Image (cartoon, rainbow, N blue to C red; front, top):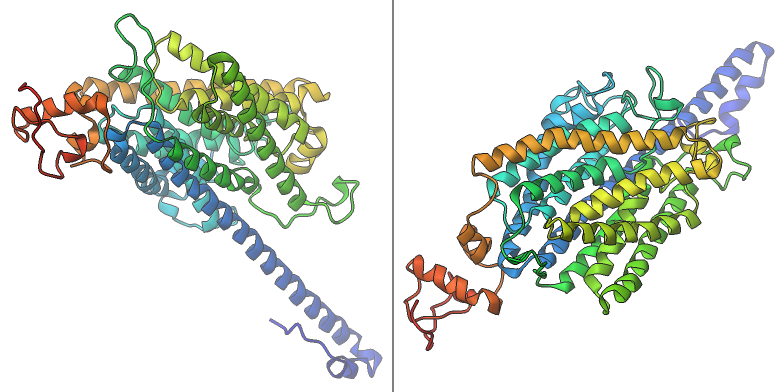
Length: 519
């Protein structure tokens, strides 16, 4: 490759005679080609760096999920839920590498499923680099993490491994292929065949693809398992089984908030792109501006949902509840994820406001039907995610849709764009519900029939940290569980009949005898 340096000494000899005109042209073209190649290399480097940084942010959400889950369950199940979060990432990493990525983005393929790049064979390719795989893997394990929250505190460890691998290796990749692959039948960027309703589905960062898939899978898992022991009394009245640490819930929520800036803005995949004549603005406006706008809409939706939940719950139950506010915040984020790039900031406020009421309403419905979800994951991710998909069909702005998906595409129904985009969004909601149901219900039902899904009553009462993981995550004292753990310890031959111990003593310290009566 020629050097980028250029001097009069190099150029002057070529101008001495007219015969050197061809040499002059070659020299100039060589210099321009060198500059062009350098700019192209720089663009690839910047875009890949941006995508890698976004992947790291999305992966950091796993820490947020872990903290949120840990704080939302009782202390006796902390080690269990933390371990499942680690394994969602680990098992999901291998299954997505071997199968999931190929099913999702293995082009060329048909509209239903990808069929190339198994085990990253023949990759990188013109369609993507390793940074793209890493980013998509972070999305896949996020879907699995959502499901683990719904079935927490009562699920066997082997069931976690099976469903996590199946979800990240098959169920989720198929949906992402439909919407995000250029070959997918619902993709707005489809290159072969007709685009759905002339529009395709706009699910920019995955309100449906990620959040609905994880939420609906969790819904069926929790429904087939049934509620936790003690969640509803004999009369059917709801009994709160509160998580043990509001501090961890808040920490997890802030970490998820931070990671969402990789989840939503990062879904542009590239940052060095000019919109040129598509915008009436000057060269200061391009994809980098749309990325900033996406960060703003994400923030406003979450903040609005948090405040709406705060005051609504104050009116409904009479006190300020930080856990409810955190869930409302995350519900707003889950809802705006579909349309974050194509709506105005004011519309994001509408999205967050409605998302808060969707979550509150679904939580009320869950109590009525005696459905138990320790993290409200199905209601939050499934319900608010579905609202987010529909919201996009109503409020997507034509100018922003043109920038991202091409000029002349249908846009939001309430923005004057007709009903074709909204119809495509309705189809996405229905199809995702159907697909996840027909794939995950047989899996959970089969595991349940083989007695591989739910732990025993004694194990659940004592807590899985003690019975399945060799001890508690940390010393704690939970009075309502003292008696049940003492009985279990006696049955296991580890406590004398006249001995009562705190839960932290089981498997750790020497029991301290008290005046408790024998069992």
